[in-house]
Picture 1 (cartoon, rainbow, N blue to C red):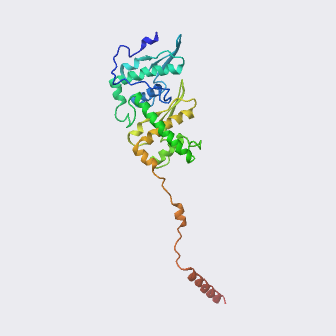
Picture 2 (cartoon, rainbow, N blue to C red):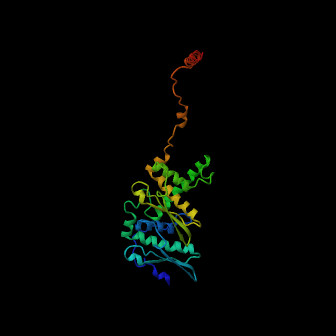
Picture 3 (cartoon, rainbow, N blue to C red):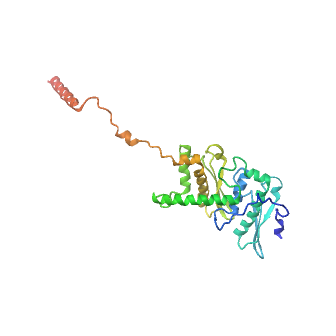
Length: 289
């Protein structure tokens, strides 16, 4: 049986290090598959590619069963496999295997140290699945409030062209204080069993933000996958106090109207100008005669 492959069997996991699995029913955007991908980016310190994680799904008499292995992990972890419980569909089977993988990585002191290392974990970011659920739910509440206010001014909800990809580009212009170029934002799209997944990095950002990557939720199209990744990146920038101050700053006014309304001061008055014209005209007439 594949279930005998559980890597965590026979190992004691400290209760303090073992986090409760995420419940996709309460927040479908924060599942253990997504959290495992985010954890791997912190451990590997780079975006995750399709070759970094192996998923094998088999059909059994009790349903679908998924086995996950991560050959890019350091040490003996590269040969470990996690088998999930049998589920009615492939998506739930992958979620079950990802749950065991996340719990095992969080229970290992060395792997946990990599995940919580300075520069890999931002202020306010999650160290466990439970904390991630709370943060994402809070962000979702803030996003709903923002969408309600945007509706009143004809924003993203009223204007379908104003999506999070456009808002991210606009936000970067405010942060960088210049137009955004193609080298400022890197987008990596990969094809997975669940669809397309996009990872966004912004090397033009200052300090440690230049090495941060945001992985979106798997989507049926590349456009939707980029929109998902842009949503996570935008929410992270808005949650940072320094960036939030730049994003909320009023747009610099060019004051073109004021410049155009300014008239040069006349050298002489209008009456003096008329007298001079008459005098000059009379003088010209005398010369001609």
